Amino acid sequence: MNPHGVGLRREHVTAMRAHVAREAPREACGLVAGRDGWSVHVYPIPNVAAHPEQRYRMDPTAQWRAFRDMDARGWDLLAIYHSHPCGYPYPSSIDVAEAAYPVVYLIWAPVGSTWVVRGYRLDGGRVRPVPIRWE
Figure 1 (cartoon, rainbow, N blue to C red):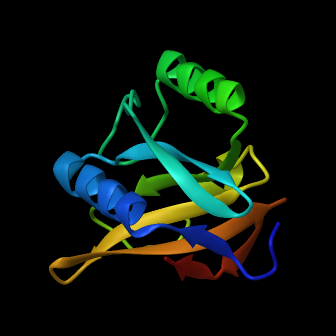
Figure 2: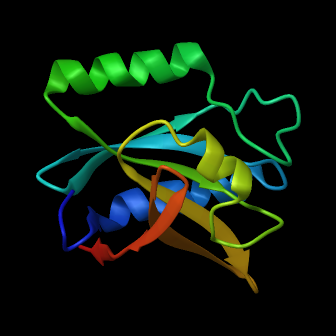
């Protein structure tokens, strides 16, 4: 991982913010493709969890299609994002336990009337903040 954090282009931040706000009070989720540590595309993925207001589970078909598209374009999985519409922009114990990819996890939550995002690495039960760079 880039020691300087993850780079997000403004249009991708805007797309994620709109997605998480639109889905509230359900948790929204998706993938961020990247190249050289910077976002190149956002894939909103439907949340098919049994209790989508409390957790997320990506639709496997949509997730697979996104991975295939990334692979075809030569992009990497840069980050996984989801929201905590009734919580904080910090990983829950479920988030930590279910983290399966060695990428940045972006967590969105409302602070007042503004949606904010924070980045984390979730490795072996450890939570490490990751700086987010903006472009």
